[in-house]
Length: 227
Image (cartoon, rainbow, N blue to C red; front, side, top):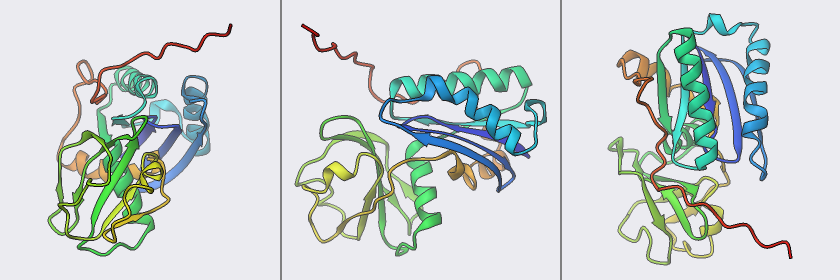
């Protein structure tokens, strides 16, 4: 199946085109200015062109559901839903935590008994996170967690933490069991193994009702006075 994948939950604006597990094209860039509204549709066009495909060739659309940037998620999910609806193809999704773990396992050799702790930045010392126990193939629920010196003390195995919310936690998580990996962003290319499995299990989303996984309510920040 040929499908387009979008990931916009963090500062990374990422688009990939796949044929099964084969990556045909990847276009992505990250910026502190959050370039999703300006670049996403240009990246989609560029990725399709690199793959020598047209939108009409797509048989499915996949999107990162969050949590993460409210605006980034809204843009990515709205674009994915519009494409899937217009092309009359199924829509699939994956959480950012799933994408980070899939990517980490693809690019690093990690002890099979280790616990993987993806962290997506939620401002200040808060992160969106979930624990993945590799031996049991078990996920805990994704939560918004304020990190302190007592975080993850209950986990006995080696714990690897990573993602764009992880770097700020290094000064706190100094226990020998906690190891930081510089692996900051979920990417559309990490859909490689996730979506074929969701297709096999027929885990498609309802295009009419699917919404981003915001986890927390949007809170507008009052701009600083220019005076």
